[in-house]
Length: 380
Image 1 (cartoon, rainbow, N blue to C red):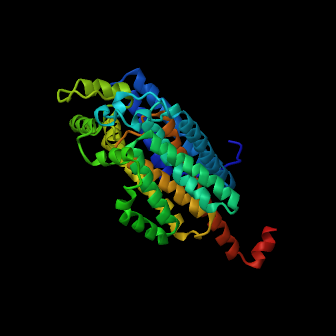
Image 2 (tube, helix red, strand yellow):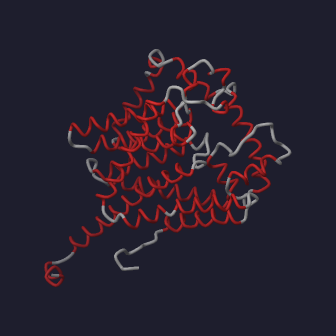
Image 3 (spheres, rainbow, N blue to C red):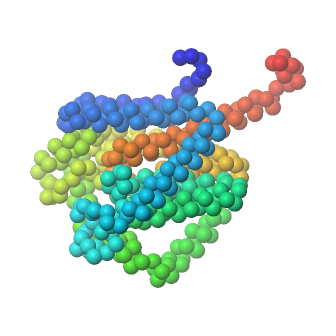
C-alpha cells in the first residue's frame, strides 16, 4: 500500500492462491460442519505465508538467514528429542507391538508434534537444508557445526522409527547429492552396491523395521492398505467435489461407509488420496501443476546457476526437502499436523523466492550490460 513493494503474480502464485480458495471452499461446503471451517481457516492462514515470503524477501541475504534458522531450530528440537527419547510413551497405533514390542521402537520420539511420523516429516524437510549449509559454508568451523546439526537431525529421524520418514530422507539426500553435483552419482551407486555389507553393521531393530515396509505382515502396513481401499471407494463417490477438509469430515464419511474394514482412522495416511478426497479432482490437479511448476523453476535455477554459488546450492536443498516430504506423503498424510503444513510451505516459498531473486538479478545484469554509455549518462 505504501509503494515499498511491487507485488508481481506469476502463474505459480495464481495456482497457489487458487489452491487456497479450494481449501476454503472445502471448509465452507463440507460434511464436517464447523470443525471443517476451522481447519480450512488455519490452512489458508498458513498458506498465506507463501505470499508473505515471496513478496517480502526481495534480496537473497534474508533468505539465507531463514534457511540457517530452520536448520538451527531443527537441530535444537532433535537434540532435545534425543535426550528425552528414552521412556517416550508409545501409542499402540504407532507400531505392531507383536513384532516390535520388545525392541527399541517402544521409545519412539514425537517431541512437540505429538506424533513420531509428523516429527519425522518436519526433520525430513530440515535435513537437506542442513546438507546445503555444510556445502555453502566456507569456514571449517561452520562446516563442522552444520555437520553436527545434520547428525543430530538424522539421529532423531532414526529415533522416530517412522519408515515413511526414513524413505523420504533417503530420497531427499540422494536428490540433493545429484543436484549439487551429478558426479556424486558414484557415491549413490557405491552405497547401493555395498548395501548388503551395511546390514552387518546396522542394528537388527532398524533392519527389521525397514524391511517390513515391503510386506503386509506388519499390522500398520496392512492397516494402510485397508484404509486406502475404503478411501478409494469413498473417492469414487465424491471424486468431483470431494467431501471437505478436516478430521470431522473424514470421520463422518469414513465411519458411515458400508465398506469399512474395521480400521479406525482419522485420515487416509496418504497426502494425495487425502487431497483428492477433500477437494476433489480439481484440487489434486491444481496441486500437481503447482508441484510441476515448482520443480521446473527449481531445476532451471540449478541448471543455469554457477555450481559454486550459494543460491544454486540452497535451491537444490529446498527442492530436495520438498521432494523428500512428498515421498513420505505416499505413506502418511503429512499435512495432518498444521505445523508441518506450515513448514512445508515456508520451505517451498523460500525456494521460490530464491529463484525469483536470481531472475531479478539476471534481468538487472542484462539491462545494465545492454545500456550504452549515453544511457548511463542520462540515467545519472
